[in-house]
Image (cartoon, rainbow, N blue to C red; front, side, top):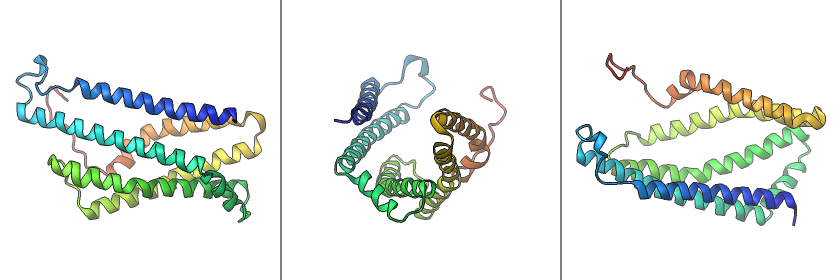
Length: 211
């Protein structure tokens, strides 16, 4: 068996196991009564509702994670990645455009698979606990905004990474690492100012001790 396959497979399973363990420990730590330090701060019914909301969301998140891992492994061992690669190569777009299309197809498929889970989380779980203020129109607009941002931000980054691997030789991985780190550092400053307000409304804190 290919050693790289073993390493990637072990990493995927280890990540899922770590995620599962952390969430199970979090579920075990949930209590219906607030800690003594928070007594008098939380309304008891609201606190219990928040704990149940956390429990429901965590369990649903574990189900989604397990499904995604199973889907990924099934697609992988069925030869889906290789089949898609060969199909894209037949269009003879070149390594950069072909790589961009390949990743784009996978990203689009991932988004489509995620939509039913996002719908359930928003319109069933959030609605059940009284937290949902999203309409169908808003949900659709948010999906379109997310797709647009992924394209506008992700495509140039991916083209840059593919170009580095294509033209900069054996140290390409190091240059890619630097570019990706710089990109995510920039996003930390860009997101609160321009990206997050596209999806949420923010109001300044009133003058108080908390502020």
